[in-house]
Amino acid sequence: MKNKETLIEKMHWLTFGPISIYEPWCKGCGICVEFCPKDVLILGEDGKLVVRDVHSCTECGLCEIRCPDFAIVIEE
Amino acid sequence: MGRLLKYLRLDKFPTVWCAGCGVGIVMGCIIRVVDKLKVNPDKVVIVSGIGCSGRMPGYLDFNTLHTTHGRALVFATGLKLAKPSLEIIVVMGDGDALAIGGNHLIHAARRNVNLTSIIINNWIYGMTGGQYSPATPRGAFATTAPYGNLEPPFEVPELVRGSGASYVARGTVYHTRQLDRLIERGMRKEGFGLVEVLSPCPVGFGRRNQMKSAIAMMRWQKDRAVSLKRASKMNEEELKDKIITGVLFEREAPEYTQEYERLMSRVKTRKEIGKREIQTGLGEIHEE
Ligand SMILES: Cc1ncc(C[n+]2csc(CCOP(=O)(O)OP(=O)(O)O)c2C)c(N)n1
Ligand code: SF4
Ligand code: SF4
Ligand code: SF4
Image 1 (spheres, helix red, strand yellow):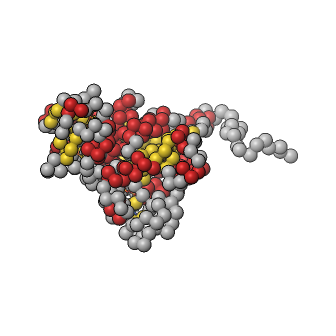
Image 2: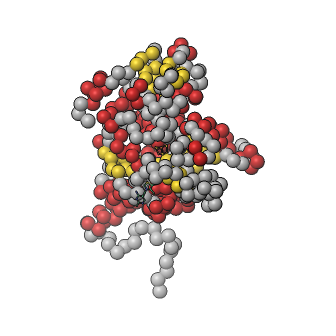
Image 3: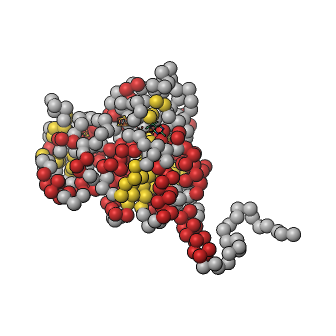
């Protein structure tokens, strides 16, 4: 895909410390919420991922690798 | 943002898969491994059959081949023989690989073609609405088994090992880091490698079997999976209802593409034609 960089730039990722989320791809399955060892994440009223307590995040990356929809990135 | 996004066909997202479907998690494992091994993306080919798992090639920015139901390994074998330098990953569903494609699976393993194959085992025909497959557990419910499935499932690793594969592993999408390692080792291995991945289909399987959500199905994986190492310290009683994961089998054996190339170069140079170079497996033969 030639214009991939432009596409990536156009995506509006929401960033909270090390956690970035891309709402349009989140399907609200809750996997990231359930298995976060530090209860950092919750599902909001619209059923999408919300960062509840960024300060407890250990940047373990488990939410990123278990999200089936690539909607979370933990910055290294 | 997101070093790995470059491997995705972003304009095709979000995916068609249901919320919590495990196929996307396996897709993430594949791109992390390709990235870690620094394989040139132009050398990578993702081959699939038909099914929800079969949709994966549509989302990956590698060379991709979405083939017919059950035949992914056949196309992949042809590709590998035509261009052995390609790094080929074959993604199949359990119905795809074990029912209609069962014959191709055992023969690809027997020939020991250097492919990395992944069976995304969600215990059901997901795409067509929840019919039971040769991997559906006994007693589980499916649209075609309204009173519970009578048939016992294949023990996939045993089947593929017995057919001649070089590498056989099993993992779950819950144990994601382990799954990365299992796929990585499969890609490094010369010869036919298979990774069976237990993966949730909350829609086709879960909701008929008291596991309504992907979360419930992944909790099941968390509770039931034991690594081979841990299992070796457990007794039969403790192992009841457990699923053993990890590298289950590995061996060195002649790889088909290389054997084929060797044969071709011999034939082409007309050297020693007629002399048996391949080990016959018959042992020493005494002619009269
Ligand atoms: C030759 C042929 N027979 C049947 C079908 C219908 N069909 C499409 S997908 C599928 C099974 C899907 O189950 P599975 O392979 O386990 O993959 P999943 O959808 O669960 O990922 C079937 C029977 C087909 N497409 N082609
Ligand atoms: S990186 Fe780990 S601790 Fe932080 S939100 Fe994700 S799962 Fe939770
Ligand atoms: S795992 Fe992904 S899709 Fe599921 S709720 Fe979390 S961010 Fe959304
Ligand atoms: S039907 Fe099952 S396998 Fe298919 S996308 Fe939905 S959850 Fe995934």
